[in-house]
Image (cartoon, rainbow, N blue to C red; front, side):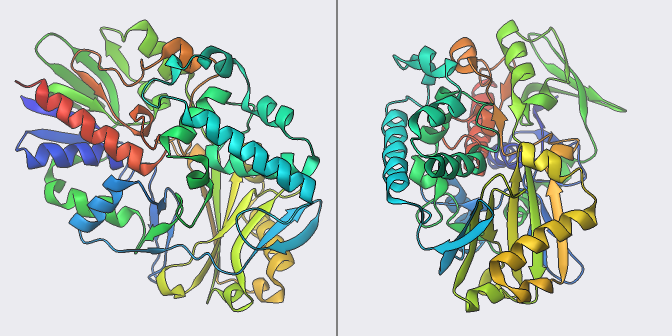
Amino acid sequence: MLDTIIIGGGFSGIAAARILHKTNKSFIVLEARERLGGRVYTKRFENGQYLDFGGQWIGPTQDRMYALCKEYGVDYYETYNEGYNILDFDQKVKKYRGLIPKIDIISLLNLDWLLRKMERMAKGIPASKPWSHPKSEAYDKILLSDFIKNNSFTKASHKVITYGLETVFACELNTISLLHALFYIKSGHNLNSLISIKDGAQQHRIVGGMQTLVDKIAAEFLSKIRYNHPVRSIIQDQKSVKVSGDGFEFEAKNVIIAIPPPLAAEIKFSPELGSQKSQIINRISMGKVGKCFMVYEKPFWRDKNFSGQALADEHSPFQTFFDSSPKNGEYGVILGFTIADRAENFFKKSLEQRKQTMLKKLVDYFGDEAKNPTAYHDFTMTDETWSRGCYAGLYPVGGWTEFQDAYSKPEGRIFWAGTEASDVWFGYIEGAVRAGEKAAHMTIGNLS
């Protein structure tokens, strides 16, 4: 009998496997895909180029990620962040410098006041127990969209913060509560960290793509990973847990579930999960993100003193753009994020229509040089069977106060990982790693 079965070969599952491997515990990893990484997916091409179709950034206070990069000899580099940014509002294109777009002074003051207000509110939220805040029930009933609307006094300030936060949370703001937003901000250190490149969550990228790191971690125990093994059933008793799928069954003393909540909800458990656990995994939805990449021979916009960053309103299918070129700018990549309703509408178009839509935007931003890309690619994990979306699970309105920590609590010999089980950097790869490591240590404790 194995000590532990890990379900899911994303960063969380592999982080758990690493701990078990180092402590000489017996385990296997069951991964439904034919690859590792989960919501991290580096697509590599025959010409040597690569694109991060999934998670791609790390930043300050994500200490576990930097420690793993050091341990496994994985290099990282600064996200390009120099020159003018672009504001695409009301079908007019303007350029500006710095984090905050160039809008009228009243809107700027309102924006500054609102961001500071959210920072103060988030600071008071206990990340490990957001439901324990004195105003948690009130905050959990308020839609984030209503809070932003009621505190935005100009159209411009409302637009800027709305589209910025849609990129942060990967959803329409009427999808989540104010409490979920404040918890998310607190778990990621602060709001400035979540929206910034310099000193923020988007500061660094991994040389060769984010999947480079997870592949290097897993290299030590590849023989213990089973690909194309989606789990259908988990049966536990007082002594062991049996995990089965199409054509396989394994038995262990413990199980770690490190997959997105909607996928966990499709596993048949016997005995059934507790009512709180069962309800929350069925009610957590996933964020909706499309990543669109226009590839060029070189990052020509840098020569024109542009950063490659843009913020766009509802007239564009994209909320934000970034320079996503590799280290040293060997070739140029502009990454466009299309999120929530915009993403749904965008991916109804044909591939060629999607390419032409993005191309038109980039020509508007950077001129005729943008007309000659070498490639276009896009990807949405919403359409991927074993992800169902990203960046993370979204708690329903009222979810935190009703279900509290039901998602992350063990159920007998079943332990829960994935970024949704972390109260630090929830929704990020850092959170996934921390949750996986914590679950591994809990299973080790359960062996004695």
